[in-house]
Length: 346
Figure (tube, rainbow, N blue to C red):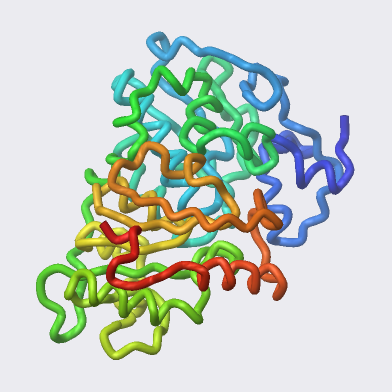
């Protein structure tokens, strides 16, 4: 059945073009390409899609797995989604993955897959012709996972494991901590003049204002961190505090961003990719959550102190830059007593 334009962009899975190509709805949306004439890839042609029907593959008997439209177009989702694949490969080391990705995904996200490819297999840009995926090999569609019902209710790592056809409870918590990041060859951070030894890293901005640390409290955080640790404080973005250094220009590549987190003594961040990267390197972290319950993101991270700021009006909101929503977030942060004894800095 041909989908209308709205249904095509919100389809819980990848799309099939009139010419038989597998397409990511994200690529249509960001290029303003009319989503006309597309069908859902669905369960046709022996494609597995857990949003449509549960499946349980025999990974012991397959050598190659085709992951279609995985694992999202954000850095955090991608880190966790790739963790699901590394957890499978830890149990079945003979498996090689081919991951098909939206061609218009942000460059810094593409870079993560390039770094991860030697650990897992290969990465191919969409669109591709359906017939190029061998019918005799396991093919799993993870397309448009934001619109899958379980994405809003499961811890994200459990969601991706479930989407790969495995019971999440069968994977130990230790395999859900993104430790595959430790296998990447990363540069040494190029510190500013005068920065020697350990440092505290502050990553205050998420992909949306409603999940970011408000600018009005960032200077207070820097002061509290200095009082608590007495170490140089660096981060990404301008903050008006004499003890803080913006190192954005020293992280031009995703590998550099990962390296700054890897070598930090401590990280402070909201609900953003940095918290998942820090878990991969076992970096102690304070992470602030405003719209998502912390257990849905950091349940398996023993070195992460989650600080939940309840804002009931914004529960479950994925993104917002509305002034009224940002004001609610700011009030929630202002209600915290952020000083050297703030319980999050342990």
